[in-house]
Length: 226
Image (cartoon, rainbow, N blue to C red; front, side, top):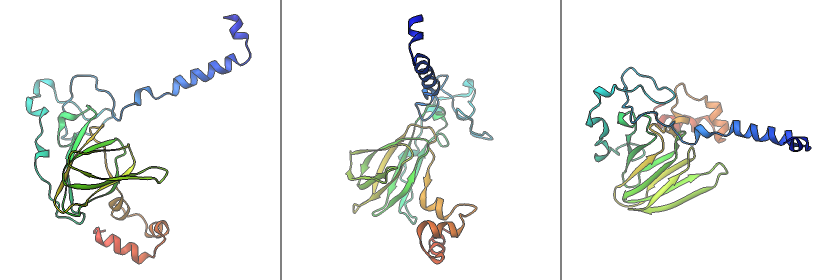
């Protein structure tokens, strides 16, 4: 051992290894922290999100109904500017998911309906087309678009945080079921984030961003009620 320590660069290499061990993100390999008990049915009323989810309902008050959810069985209302509807099955609608690191959505599309470009900052998304014909795509941080037209039974995946979209390119209604590795993945919808934020993003920021006149920005904002 003494001979090893005398070798040039030994301490440098040892220090490097120790630093790597300290900074490796062992606890953060999942989108959500691992649970520390069998379940933690969320108490949503008057509760704020903590590092590991919502406060737990006392086990003595938990019932079978806390672990079942029928919200995804109902078709969403697609009568809106984009022609689509998201029915979330996350911790806010299904408290039994609290701290379990997963959730699901139902997404309905009218013919021509679009789930506009958006991202999920806290989760990777996977999905399967249940009916219809969808054009699905996502853009990498290198501005590379990956896309494909999918039909019923085909699956897709969108890496965490990347901008993506789905558009119904068929002649009838379409529907997908999507899954996330977070009980609350979050969603940043680009058009509403940019043109309907509160307080609003200054017009001069948007005109310079898109290289257009203020009248163009005002016209877009008007479509979002901003």
